[in-house]
Length: 220
Image 1: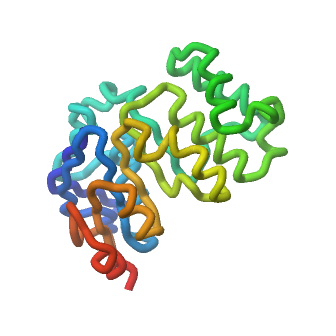
Image 2: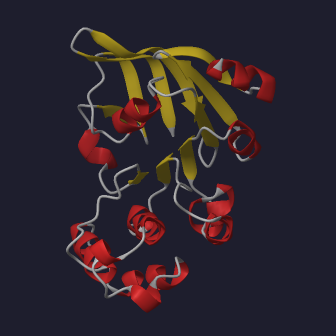
Image 3: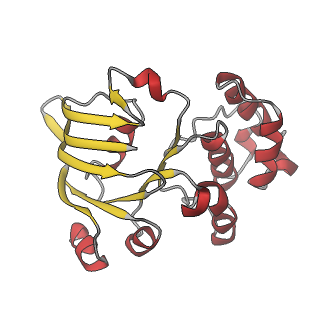
């Protein structure tokens, strides 16, 4: 599903990622760990086709990035810090808009509003909702088009534990999707992943199976 070989991404003179090499099989979960500024979010944005790699190679769902980015359009679900929703629109209106973008039947909107527990407040503008409620709608947006690959940046932020657990069938390990999961929760991320990628300062310190002690060293 994902093959990276010597991936590099720069911002001007600053190297955000260098030498990233990892393979993620279908339906596996890759945990991406590291302190702030390690390059985790940059990596997700490269995989989503939002940033161009400057060196090395990146293949996602069989498509070479960035030249074949069009081949992964509609096959990736991206859940980042920005919910990518319009504050002046309601949750239902936001999801309906994204459904039209992906040519998804409108019935899917109602289905997901119920699945994330937002059917009762679906017609209120986002500006009137709590951050946790907006995060639930962002989860619905990310999986609206039933993508085989999920890119998740701290997906449980702003969610209480009960809500986070309720969303597990949608974005969790048992969702049947390939996942790249960015998290600061070392123990939790390792428990729900098959592989781990450790980053610090844009450099890859380990890739593959990792223990909790090795992962915690990233933050010291």
